[in-house]
Every structure is written in structure tokens, then in C-alpha cells.
Length: 226
Image 1 (cartoon, rainbow, N blue to C red):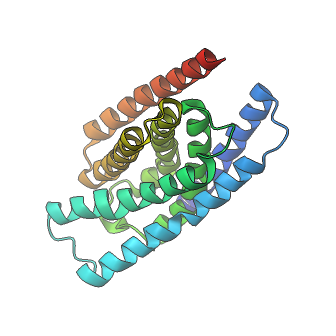
Image 2 (cartoon, rainbow, N blue to C red):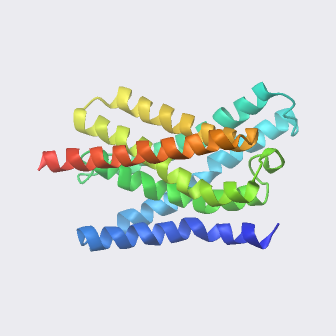
């Protein structure tokens, strides 16, 4: 493994520090207990990803001989297991809190859960413990952009889970959040497997536009609650 890949391990921690600094400056947060818990629990979420990869390895023995099998691995084994783990943490631990009022809180907690997850996931991907690094083109770029992509997945899931809390319509909104974050997660991986530069550019622009839109919408809804 190259030095460049090792350096990618610090991207997620740097993003965590950046977001914490912004929150403390913007909202004058005194206690970071909930944020710390979100990060730690996010790290534990990689266990489900590891188990899913281990089970499919026992079944397929590393053989991804066609695109259909690869699509199943990317969207179900990798993306769904990752997003399901993060979803369960968000719903079971933070959703019930009194200060979790809507999409903005959902986005904030989900981002830190996702960055905790990516902190360890990047290391596992780099060492080939999970995923299929030999099938991923521009592997170093994948490692560097994965934490940024997980921020977007977190925004998507957090927004819809928060909408479910605000509208008291949990099942539909929660299902939408889990489905979309899984789809976007799988699409990110698939873009690197196909090595289609145009697809990767389209994905990056689309994620950026959707992410910014959801954040602004979450802030707008929060201001409307006051």
C-alpha cells in the first residue's frame, strides 16, 4: 500500500474536527457528549459491513464473475449493510432525544455517525478487509472521496429521518431515507468499478447539489419551527 493511501486515513478525522469546530462556533455548544457518542457508535457500525462481507466471501469465495453479481455485492452487501447499521444507530439512540426535533438535527447526528463509520471503513477498504479493491479503479481517489461521500449519505438519511420525526410519519420517511442513502452509496461504489469518469463527475455534481439543497431545506424547516 502506498503512502498516499495511508494519508487518506486522516480525511475523516479532519472532517470531524472541521464540523465540530463549526458547530461550536455557530451554535455555542457546551457539551459534545452526543456528538462523541455518534462518532463512536458510527465506528461500531463497521461490524455489520464486516459481517456482510465475510458471509458473502464464504458463499462466493471472491468470485465476482459478472456485473449482476457485482451489482448485488455493491448495492446490497456493501451499501445496504453500511446504511442499515447507521440507520439503526440514528433511530435507536438519537431519534428519541428531546432535542431531535426535525431534519436539521437528523442531518447533524447522521453526519457524525457517518464520519465515525468512514474513519474505520477507509482503513478496512485500504487493507482489503472489506470490499473488492482489485475491482475499483482509481483506488486512492476512492479512499479520499469516500469520507466526503459518506457525509452526503448522512445528510440524505438524516433529513428524511428528521422529517419523519417532525411529521409523525415515521415509516414512509424512514424507509425513504434508508433507501436513498443505500442507493447513493451503491452508486458511488459502482461509479469507481465501472471507471466511467463522466459518471463519477455526474455523481459528484448531483450529490453536491442534492446535499446542499437538503441542508438548506433542513435549516429552513428548523427556523420555521421557532
